[in-house]
Length: 86
Image (cartoon, rainbow, N blue to C red):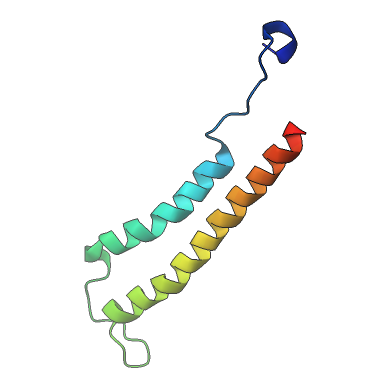
């Protein structure tokens, strides 16, 4: 049904592939940090730092990158929606 047949504007879907990808980008760090058994060990060491510590510090940077990626994806989709609404 289009706007012409029903008289109401057609809205784009709220859940889109872009938003699902953004959500996955935000969930990945939580899963990685909550799955303690995967990194609760001392080896391999990196410049003398046990795996447990450097793995968590690595996720600080990875989480930042994934959060930024999700932000960019959602902003790009919002801009596209605004352009389509004009």
